[in-house]
Amino acid sequence: MTFSYMEIWQHMGVPAMIIAGVLLAMGLASLTVFLERLFTLQRSRTTSRAFAAAIADKMRGADVEGVLAEAQSEEYARGHLSRVVRSGLTMYVHARQTSDVSGLSAAERTRRHLERYLEEVGEDLRRGMSVLASVGSVAPFVGLLGTVVGIISAFQGIATSGSGGLSSVSAGISEALIETALGLAVAIPAVLAFNYLTTKITHDEGVLQRSAGELLDMVEDWEERSVQSGGMRRERVA
Image (cartoon, rainbow, N blue to C red; front, side):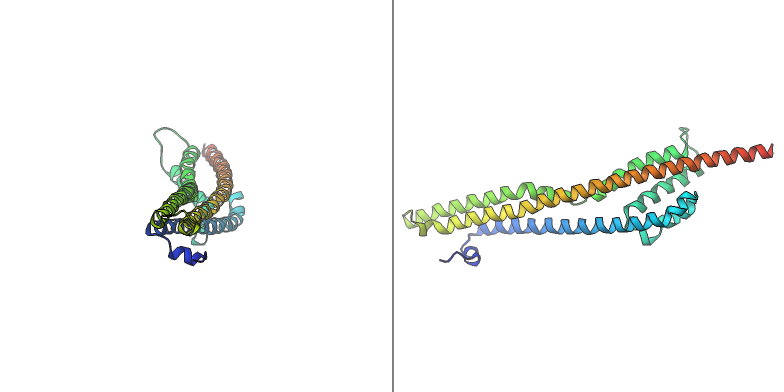
């Protein structure tokens, strides 16, 4: 028997094939999640940068309706920043138009709403990360299970042949080592991908939190201007 991968696969037992298939499926799942998150995060960053440039002048000019119109545009729908701004300004406009029994100002209601919404955004950013974490932690144990199955196969070869020669155990030993290597080959990239994406997502969450803080500063400024202009109008009427 030659020790090519095809020969080893052909001589594997059914349990070992099942374990190898599970490991390959786990590797494919982690690769899919990694590529999907990578693409989604990059697209969100690109869209968010374009959105920030589009609303810069409107934010400085206190053009709430103009900023909200940009945030609701389909052009920026895939960016997380536009979602945060859209959600915050929608709440702000609604809070200005309705009274609150608790006596909270529109700016305070917007702040509380954004705190809750940022938690939802964080969950969306981390979607699928549990797959990478699970694969990274479980794959070595699945490979270890395959190792045990291969050792059992080796001992069965000894029992069948009645001798402990290399020829009777080589198939089982090679099967065990292949399963171990496959488990590690799946787990190591999954852990690296998880750590890489976690760093990127944490950075994006920080950017969104700072942007939400800047939006709240703007909202409070708009609120103060509105109160002052209302007071000036009442003085003129008087």
